[in-house]
Length: 113
Image (cartoon, rainbow, N blue to C red; front, side, top):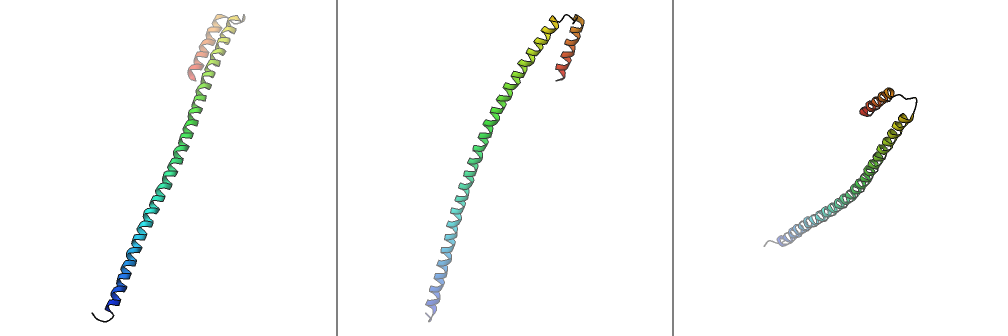
């Protein structure tokens, strides 16, 4: 073996080992970084799902309240119509022909709503 050849061989092996260690270290860092990123995205998705559920519950409550309000409005409209009909029956100044004309007018108004 020529003199100095053993020295260069051991230097080459040190370089190869150092490069291999660096590659392994980079691979480990990449894997853990990816896992951390995936976990962060899972947490973000969980937060978004929770927000979606909260908004869905709120929307359902608003829908129920709107339905109740619409039902009350229908009952009030029916009561108003009953009172108006009773007023027409009681009013001595309203004749039967005028009464029928106003009923037809009310029917047309309800049909256009």
